[in-house]
Structure formats: structure tokens, C-alpha cells
Image (tube, rainbow, N blue to C red; front, side):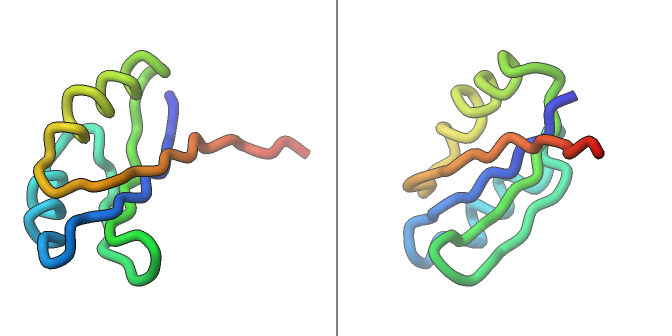
Length: 79
């Protein structure tokens, strides 16, 4: 299982539309509207890098008013 955090920049005034478009997507486990450089943060779970690619290409890029994203793939620390 791959967990990723995706920060999303949204066209001004369209945050709620983007939030509503993504909140029911099965790969999106958590979604937050946030303040600062980014407008929305997603926590996404997928089974592989290929599935993450598919999520970006076939879901996220098709959401209107998304201007930019930054994806961070989570890693666990082992001590």
C-alpha cells in the first residue's frame, strides 16, 4: 500500500467545487481545506505507483479548477 499526500492549488473562489469533486473518490482517504500556499490537502491510498499515476492522470487532472499539485509519497521510519 502506498500512502501519498497531495497538496493542491485551486483557482481562487473554486475551492468548494474542487473539495466536493474529490471528497467521494475512493482513493482519497482524507481531504482538508487549508490556509497558506495550498488550498486543499489530500491523503491518498493506492496499491502501487502505477495506481498513483492513474489517480493523477485519470482523476486529479480531470478536476476542473485545479491549477497545480505537489505529491509527497509517505515513508515510514524504522528504528
